[in-house]
Image (cartoon, rainbow, N blue to C red; front, side):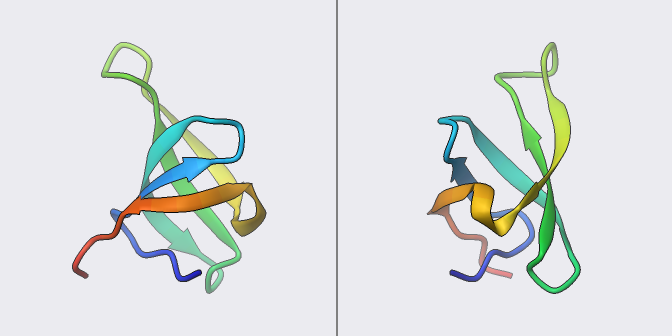
Length: 59
């Protein structure tokens, strides 16, 4: 699975998020999770935390 910046992903814990940055050649990612500005949070995850890509960016 190849993850790109701005892809929307589903994490194995059920949360959905948007990839803001790809780190270390697909090793880690900075992902924004949350329902809106009131609870958005940037987290660092690994490829093992990702269940699937929901929407792939065109980049």
